[in-house]
Image 1: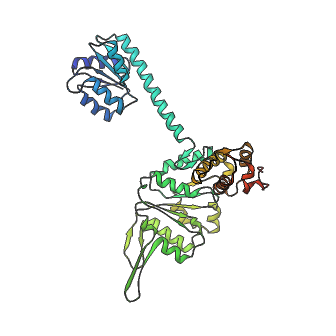
Image 2: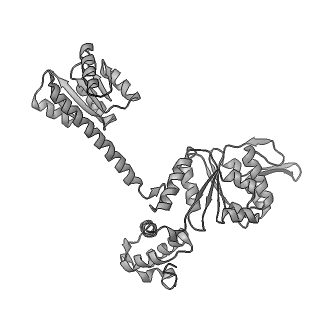
Image 3: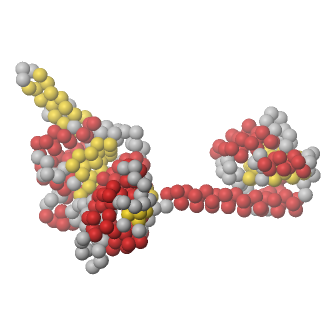
Amino acid sequence: MILIVDDERDTRTGLAEIFESWGYGTQTAASSDEALDRMENTQFEICISDLMHPGMNGVELMRIVSERYPEMAFILLSGWGTISNRDQAIREGAYDWLAKPVDWRQLKVTIERAIEYVELCRDLHRLRLDLATFGKCGSMVGHSPAMNGVYCLMRQVASSAATVLVTGERGTGKGIVARTLHEMSPRRSGPLKIVSCAQVSDTRLTREIFGYATDMHAGMAIDCAGLFELADGGTLFLEDVDGLSPELQSMLSRVLDTRTLRRVGTRETALNVRVIASMHLDISGALQSGTLREELFYRLGVVTIHLPPLRDRGDDILLLAEHCLKECAELHNRDVNGFTSAAQEAIRAYQWPGNVSELTNVIERAVIIAKKHSVDVKDLVHISSRKSWSKP
């Protein structure tokens, strides 16, 4: 799409007819202000402007366009000027400066080259974005096919209010997924509340999640909001939700179904909370055994994200190890900046039954005890004596 800026109507119309005969779409503007208005609503590849017109002239318009729309090619047309004028305009952001009367063959070649230039700029911008996010999604690291699938699903669901169930072995980073989804969502400015549902009494979990309100001791009222209310406008992460008793799962299912909560002694309250839950058990097995109630699964698992174990993530293992080493070296003020080749081989070969959590622990310890600038096998105390280096 080409935007033509000229205060003479006949010139605008004539240029538009010529460009359209060459196969380009066009819009016209009689002034710089009108041109800027059009740019707000339409993406143009080229702006071709007369040098002199009322109000803001072509050079002033070019400077604004160069700042706001750096991927747009700006071409100036002028009935007067010198080589130095042209060079100065190009230094300030113009793609080219052509003299009037216009040589149509030269103009056509210039337009074609300008379109190619714009396409290259856009390709470069996309490439830079891809490189900036390569192997990452928020604070998550890795570029294996399995993790790229996870990232894609996370980006699709992050902006929605849908409940998400995150599954995977212990230590695979389910909590990191929950935090990343919160940070990527429109609720990022709201609170993120986290509760572990494993090995905690029903009484404590009921009060912690749902809150309570009672009258006690000579009329003194105790009114305590639970995490559902404290997470209002944000996200509630229920870790190891399969650890809830059947009774609590039923209560949770009702809250998710009605999006309301009633504490004892209080009226019903509407909830504005996005719920993310995690479990490490196989879903089908948990449903068959009754560990996870079917009605709760249907409400939690609107979207299910499964995290692969670290042993199935290929080169992600070393990528994560290097990322962890850098963070730990900064945290502990240690001048450790890499791994020896033997250490790299050991890290790749080890099975990591504790997944990312185990890897983080091992690398942090190695950074602390390393006597040289690179972590060696002997610094990987936790795995150096184990026999599970070789993959089965």
